[in-house]
Image 1 (spheres, rainbow, N blue to C red):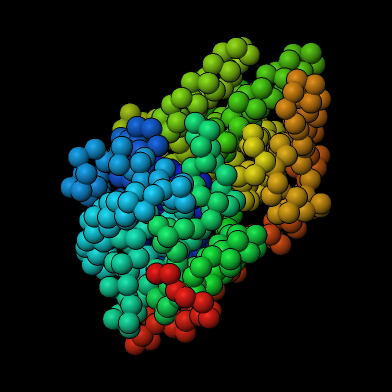
Image 2: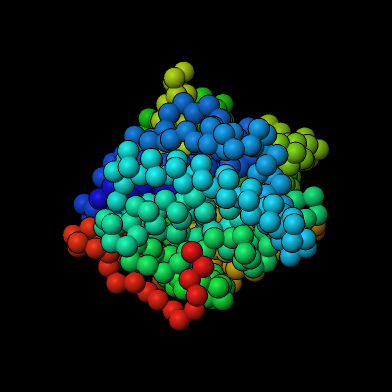
Length: 485
């Protein structure tokens, strides 16, 4: 089957896309999905993503399984200053209950005007790509309600009413209440849906997937007949064999000294991700290593400094203040597949970086600086995939997701806590190099099998393929409440 991707992230690389790649691997292995995957990565409606708006930052090359479309001209045809327009719409949707009737009417008209352009864009994209199923990632959040509205309308026109088999899978990793992101003291998203936020409805051509039971509980309170289905994320397979030439070339090209362990921060450089805490922890570990006469670790941060330039400046200043600038490497966004760019410089993907770090006795730092935004937090899981230890700051979902059997180091903010954690961190590096069970071993692997089984996505992909063999869509899941879409 032909699958298309729409991502609400507005980034050329992101955690959501790497998870999609893992799902795609399952589908390809089952003989269900064809390459390449046509994709709109959301550049044209995310002016908050630094230099990626409206057509994406320069990319040396997308992986061969992905074909990215440019929709940067769609919003420009509706509004002369689309960056301002997107910011205004998102802010007004977030505070819709405070708007006057006249303001609400003006907002609705503005949304409809922009949505018409995106409906035409998605309709043309689906037709040209001969797309059977669209997977729409994090499009329920209100970053760009005109885009979501346009996607709903285009999908209904293509697949609704039995027009053709197939449809759209809305795949939500975050929802309104659980995504408590603030900018300039204002909440970016409303705490619940309102009259302006399109929701997945019920129909033969619609599937709604959320990644946790908590998100399903929230979604079940939404005013829609759509029923969310809990399907856990799919983790990558991290091999344990000898490293290959590209790993050595990456180390050489980055000027990384042999013998120094690699710590990974597999997060974007975005304020709630707490990259500054990882840097503070690196500085404390550096001091402990010097005290013990051990090599200083490097910290490799996955994200790009272009996504949130204001926060990025604070992160860089933190590294300078703590004297670890030379020990921190910002990778500029980890690609969806390892490749050498036009100058021959290697960019390693998530799996290759995990393999490389594990070979040095490294570990993973996952340090969100707020407790109530992460719905899963895959950093600890990625560490366990590679048999590495992890260090985690406290966040609400951790215990709920991983449970008491998952082994990791925990830390809080403050110099005393960081110094104590640094002692344990350095010992974990030493244990890993001595091949003791520093990463949690069998206990953590058992947790991963329980929390992140691949059977859910495998079953859904077979269901989607089965629909294509029917003259109309499969059975709908319906609840006796009004369908909002």
